[in-house]
Length: 311
Image: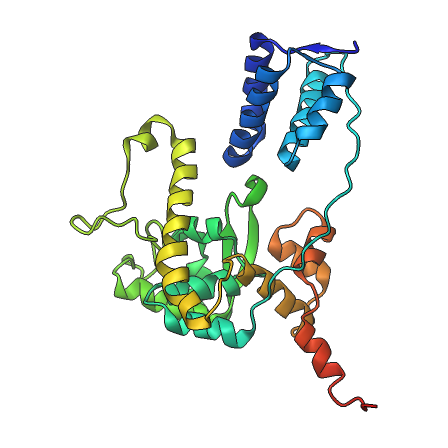
């Protein structure tokens, strides 16, 4: 079959097929582009694909065509389009923060968000912002640590990017400070083990009741609620902590994700952790992705050549 009829019935079938296969953010983006394709074109073939490619400005738009190919394959529909390869834009070197800058960030923010920044940087090879927002007391293996408080801690990061779980280590001083924080806010159980819900509220606490806000959306559409909750808490953290305190202290704009890039590079360059182990800690499927995280810090290159003779 050389062409595919793009009608309403096919659109509904593809959307239903997509939903269990993609994370909510990806599902929404793909669905939006898919809707535009079905609205603008009546059929999909080589000619319409060529026209689409001229207007595509985002990778998700090209991914929609691959997704249609996959849908057809899964449903025994004899249709497949060869998608022309585009010249990939050059990869940008991620912005790296120095240890001194990270310490200044930590010292500039109010409690307990100094702990949150320390967690983002120090858990494993660094956390994504969505992971620190969703982090719960029960995700940390407190019983194992309590048996030997001089040892490092262990946490299970659940439903990370791609819905993958991974295990990460926690430095012992950070474990002690997290435990002290749990003690201060009264979340220790009868066995003196931290228990309860989210570690950091990121502004989601009702000041009158002291409880986490739970909108009706959580009961009606829990998956959408999770997405909206993370997005709203990210925006709160971005404005109320990063912009208000960290950027003011550093005198420049920063990305929260730079903490994760900086941590991976620090482990690779300073601690000499093998790249394959950093890949596991980051939760990357591809080593190529990890290599993008561990770009050589120019300052370390300068140190290597600081004693070379000048002409």
